[in-house]
Length: 243
Image (cartoon, rainbow, N blue to C red; front, side):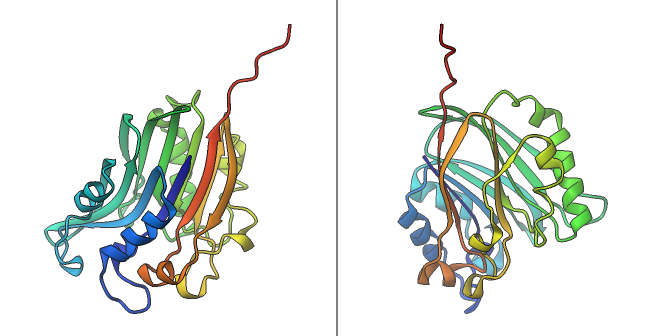
């Protein structure tokens, strides 16, 4: 199974500043993922030609679609989007906004994969380190997150974790394994000269990661200001005790 996580920057190229949702689609299609987690997805905003990007992307890939509006821009909005090849049995949206800072949010989904249910937490965190640690603590302590604890869990998204401090904090104490490590192999920002490892993934439970990588191509370097993160994984079967 394959998951792709990507901050698409509203479909606006990081260097040429040109809007093209098709470039984003082409990059995603080249990876052929089963789960697509996108941040900074526009809906009815002038800068992206008033496109309803969640609807257009869901229509193109013919996937189940769950959109979370976080920030209002004029009469439109932008936020997080999950597209799934498989049915979504549970879906919740929680706010991660701290006081008067920029609105942020997380999506909590249970995906019915061919290998069993997967708990997916998808989010885009803030720019300040203390804010990010508060946001992760809020996520991990939230009743809706806790309710899916028995399931294998993936936490993914643009975590803006420049200094890589989240892996050794609350996530580690809650039993999560850092997938996007070492950071030298997962530099994703800026896309044309990637020096920062901002796009992260963590897992817990009966989940085996086969491969994780940053997808760096000539097109992905142009399509956004981030590079996509791609994760190949399986849900491990429970071990049957020998008699």
